[in-house]
Length: 180
Length: 180
Image (cartoon, rainbow over all chains, first blue to last red; front, top):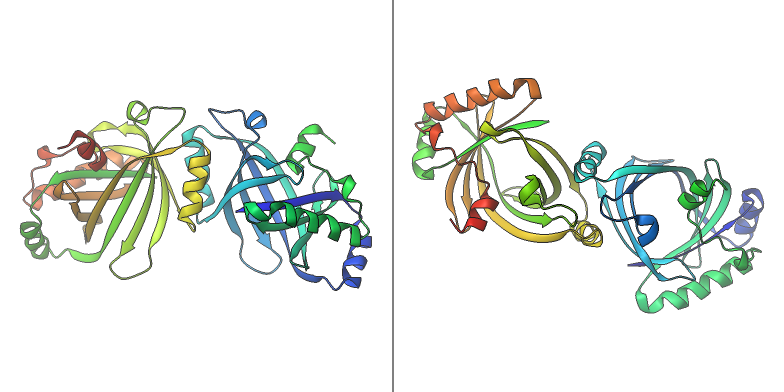
């Protein structure tokens, strides 16, 4: 599975009005606490990989814990990566497994996400602790369709009054580590 | 969590009769397919660790997939190890995560297990592909109670007409790799 994802800074109050005007559906909201791990055998900052445990609490519903691996970029323009993710039952056991194997927690990102659906894309209004307000537009796709889906995302951002040229390619983790 | 575990070769037909005489309860039966992984940064055969994906199909019930890490021995006599295990929702994603991190499947163990409960212990009649029939006696405990629980397991094996001195300390994986 490939994921096309573009991110910008955006004022959420303004953007909510524009999304309502375009008939976007508010799907749900949730808080996410992400813990990123260092590897014992690679420097993820150099190999451009990530290993993450995400604890997620939906506004309505049960909390979940997921383990995610993100591989290096396969398409730099849209930050497209190969990604594998599975839910796990026992977060404490998972941290024990990673610790036993020599992986260590390196950084934590906490955010609230407010999801909308529009034209087949997911639009998320992200409020990130210590960083501020952002919008992300995302869509899962196949390797063949990556470019097509990326162009659609750029068009949709323009329709919403946002400037795709202001795309931020640095992850929230990266922005936090930069102290931006 | 610590697990005390002793294993012997045993004729299952005979042992079923002895267990019935002792009033043991047949709890359930299941097949387990274990895939053991190599690490990219350590030689698990030397560090005495294991990383395993277990796919399990109960006689009655839904299949599950679990990820397990076993640390080095903390008490050699009873094969006591620190162990962390969590169920995962998506086996394919989990293998993708391990592969992305550089872990590779090294060996596979397939077995049928028939579980009985007796005196607080779990007794499993294991039929292992390419190896034959075994019995395992197991109990989870705390670090402080390891020795006490191990002595209880030895006593119980004797009561069942088995000889604790015939304990096999090599794992099924090890026996398969030895070609025993």
